[in-house]
Image (cartoon, rainbow, N blue to C red):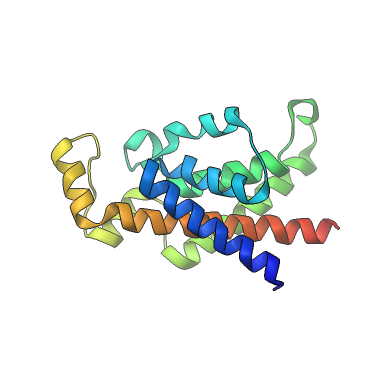
Length: 169
């Protein structure tokens, strides 16, 4: 792996981790880190990631919000536009890249579901709408743990996107 590629991966991890530690909202933090490293910006796409935190809507019932953020970045950069709605090849390409991200995530974490990840990391699921549960989650180290996951997913996604760019060159 060339030095610049590795530096971008390291930056993606650190940026994602710091965004999550400071701002919360795992899908947006992941997406922001990826966009920063790749020199992208799109506030509408960034905004659309808001409600995917902690599964979906802070419920834990859905896949990891960091994984959502990485998947959104892949779709943004390799997905089809409405004018290409009938182009199945663009649908397939983005999904193959998203599947690669999902497969790397599962290889590392064993599951994609947020509630399953919480159970794995902390031995239980936390209801983040309950102030006492939120405090307990923070006390258990959720912020540190999820920050690492955000960093990992940002790094994985940037790696997949850089590999795809190299193939296209």
